[in-house]
Image (tube, rainbow, N blue to C red):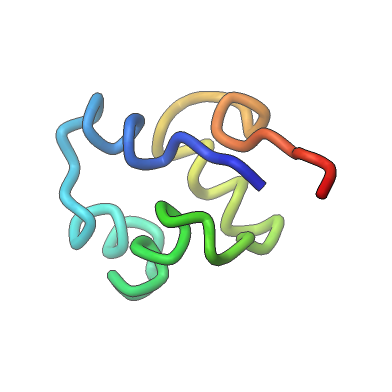
Length: 65
């Protein structure tokens, strides 16, 4: 699944550590998300949308494999 977490994080002037703290996850989770190695739980996806004040669909793009 594609995402634009890194871009949104930059727009909101957040470091990986700051975003991880807000989401109550590790920095490693943020790294994995940004490198598209990890697909978040629906709960984490909703938390990301809340932090970035947008819809989940604005963060993630599903692509068939």
